[in-house]
Image (tube, rainbow, N blue to C red; front, side, top):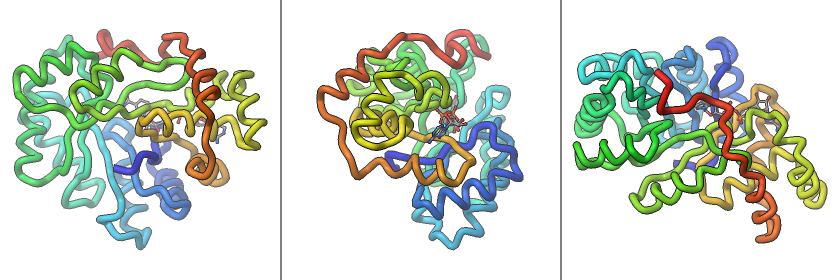
Amino acid sequence: MPQLGFGVWQVPDAEATPAVAEALKAGYRSIDTAAAYGNEGGVGEAIAQSGVDRDDVFVTTKLWNTDQGYDSTLRAFDESLKKLKLDVLDLYLIHWPTPARDLYVDTWKAFVQLQKEGRVRAIGVSNFQPAHLRRLIDETGVVPAVNQVELHPYLQQSDLRVFHAQHGIETEAWSPLGQGGELLNDPVVTEIAARHQRSAAQVVLRWHVQLGTIVIPKSVTPARIRENIAVFDFELSDEEIAALSTLDRGGRIGPNPDEFN
Ligand code: NAD
């Protein structure tokens, strides 16, 4: 899985095709969508039209909360694959644990089955807390390859990252730019950016890269799409990484996974 990919949350279906086409042209080889985004069709169209070899693109999609459960997962997977126009998916994620439904273990068993059948290469989860991860592992013996969670300098998820490292789970950061808000105007970020003659977004993405997290920044603006992948030709010093690491506030932009259904 490439460490840096392209996210398409909030991109309407029709706009997803030109946006993903632009991303593939800019060199992205990993696309992150979800059934709930309503744009798997547009993403699939862009991949099919791109001329990029299918095996060179890593495609992630996610199972929505209302489709959790063994049989409904198998049906939802078929639907996603059809929309994406793919025979095999690269990574399938349970979008949220939705603990109040208490279906994520059954859902995970369906994921394990899909992987056994060779219909998906890797299986993982999103927004899982340590207690949810522990339960999956204890009850099925199958460790998720990835946990995709909200993560940026204002919410660094240090305890969760330690848990992931102990269990061999890759950490993937959603909203890696903090959704482009206050974070990109933070003086600590902008000062480092000025020093490197880079944008604030590039500094934040480079922080993720050096931290070892997988990142999937989103943009529909061609110049930003190109800017966000141009982060492999400069390096932040240990002091700069340390300065960015002081920004953690522990506050979420998105919902609390223990409560979201
Ligand atoms: P993000 O942190 O990637 O921020 C995107 C926003 O930042 C853009 O809409 C734009 O306003 C701004 N931006 C982007 N590039 C910029 C640049 N170079 N300079 C200035 N501003 C810039 O936020 P996101 O879209 O929430 O997260 C990225 C991806 O993560 C999503 O598209 C989606 O694929 C995934 N995601 C997953 C979940 C989940 O529950 N699993 C939740 C949210 C997002």
